[in-house]
Length: 467
DNA sequence: GCATGATCATGC
DNA sequence: GCATGATCATGC
Image (cartoon, rainbow, N blue to C red; front, top):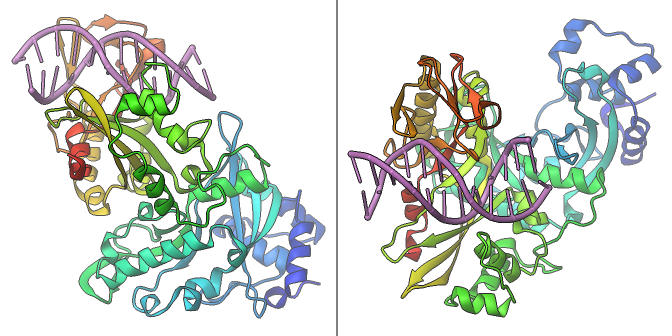
């Protein structure tokens, strides 16, 4: 019989292996246990597995689940995405950050390390519309941070978070601040506020987590057996950003023509500049498909500054569906999640005397305070306009609308993004192939597909050091 | 010259 | 066929 919290490492590993291929219902059946719907509905799958697979009752938060083994147990989902690839469904939430005490520690003496340096992971395959009790555990892995190739980066991330607390900026923490170990919000809503030691400002309660993107990389490594993912850090023990800086420094000041010559690029296609950047890092596919960019959820973007200091183009986000987005709340919106978990790496080319010169890079994520204020207002304005009915104006061949445009707030705006334009309005106006290029609005009208964009002027602010 | 709607080009 | 990065075109 299992002995709950006292299981030693060997027992934990062998019980974990025994669970592979089984759902919670399978486990209960083997043990001839029935549980009431009430209990099944209330507890998360993780809690139920702890209880019925390991014989463990709910325990206090501050120690690892298994003591004295010092091992934490995590049951976490992954899923299949459209292109057939595997992806983590969620971030792996670890312990809540105690703003009042954790800053007094060093990394290896921290509460984070004490609780999470050994994590037994059980992965289950998440499927839509399936009872969680029937979802099957398919893989397990004992994750030991001290053996992880990412230990150095994780320590760097921990220090970044702690230093923000020490600087009295716990309220400005954002999950996208760091690479692999993040500080995610933990709590129902904005009312989950906590005190912080070096500022009077209340801060959102946050927990350490391994980011969804990082978990995706683990899923692909341990479950998907993807072996062809290229690395940026080709065996180097440097920190990611230092390594990038070293590579970039070698090319600063070179012109587009010189770089193309150096890297044997003959084409003049639209993705010329991203080709150049890929070659700098000596990767065959795109930078965005490399291990580090996937793990840290970094999107590479090439930016060109014109001679007058203007950036020609805004940057687009994925298309949203009108009827889906109006059912979201800001707190759980895709846009908020995206801004809070994505980093952007801008590679900057500036036009001087008619030639584009490479100026360097900037790794950036949107400050949390802007997300919580301006972006929230903008998002709500967009949703309200969609709910109330978009107002259209036909001007010649163009159809103007009243969604928040580039002049609305200085940061982001809504704009069409489609191969062609297409509309079918209640006024009787019709244009283009709505089945291909349009999306239906809540009131039944059809409008060319739209997405959010970063204003080009905001990007200019972000990279202003290079202008 | 810029805002903004429209469209091209590429790759999965 | 479509999403998405890149870019164009028109009118104020």
